[in-house]
Image (tube, rainbow, N blue to C red; front, top):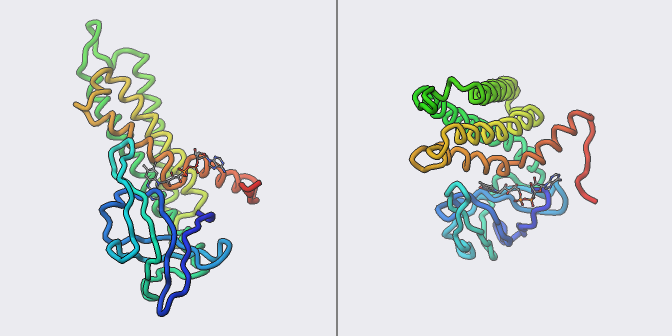
Length: 248
Ligand SMILES: Cc1cc2nc3c(=O)[nH]c(=O)nc-3n(C[C@H](O)[C@H](O)[C@H](O)COP(=O)(O)OP(=O)(O)OC[C@H]3O[C@@H](n4cnc5c(N)ncnc54)[C@H](O)[C@@H]3O)c2cc1C
C-alpha cells in the first residue's frame, strides 16, 4: 500500500486524480469508490478520496473473475476531478486509515472461520450417516482424528478472533492481535474446508454441496486483506519489538 502511485494533484477547488487500481472485488458494479491516493511523497503523503465511477476520466477495464467467482476489474483514473469535500482523509491520514484496516481484517478473519465451520458441520453430518465397508464413516479412527484436528482449529481460531475483538475497547483492534487471528483463521478455515471436502469424497468435490466453494473461498482470504506472509511479518515485528524494512 505504501508504494501506491495514484496521484492527487491540486486542481481548482479540488484535486485531479491519475492512476490505476488493479484489484477491486465487485469493482465493475460500484457506484462510488474509496481510493487511496498520494497527495505527496512518502507514507505521510497518502490519503483517500471518494470517486464517482460515472465521473469523466473513470474507466473500468476488462472484467475478470477470482477462483471463488467474484468479478473484478482494473479501474483507470485519467484526470478525474474530485471536489475538496470528497477528500476523506487528506495528507497525513494514512495512519488513521490503516488502523481502520484492522477492522476489515477482523471481518475477513470471521468469514474464514465461518466458511470452515460450515464445511466442518456438513462433513460431520455426512460422517454420521454415510456407510462404507458396512460401518459409518465416523467410526473410522483415521477420520475421527481429522475431525478432532478440525475442531481444535475452529475453537482456537474462535478464541483468537474473540481476543482481538474484545481487546478493541480502546476504539480499534490491535494490529498484532488482528494479524495473529487473521493469519491463523485464514489457514485454519482453508485446512478445515479442505479436510471436510476429503472426508466427503467425491460428493465433497462436487458442486452438489457447498463444501468445495468454502475451500475455494477461503483460499482467497489467505491472500486478500493482507496475505498470510505479510501478516507474519507484522507478527515478527511484535516478537522482536522492532520494525524490519522489506526494502533492499
Ligand atoms: C479474492 C481476492 C479479493 C481481493 N479484493 C481486493 C479488493 O477488493 N481491493 C483491493 O485493493 N485488493 C484486493 N485484492 C488484492 C490483494 O489485496 C492482493 O492480491 C494482496 O495484497 C497481495 O498482493 P499481490 O497480489 O500484488 O501479491 P504480491 O505482493 O506480488 O505478493 C506475491 C506473494 O509474495 C508474498 N510476499 C510479498 N511481499 C512479501 C514480503 N515482504 N515478505 C514475505 N512474502 C511476501 C505475498 O504474500 C504473496 O504470497 C484481492 C485479492 C484476492 C485474492
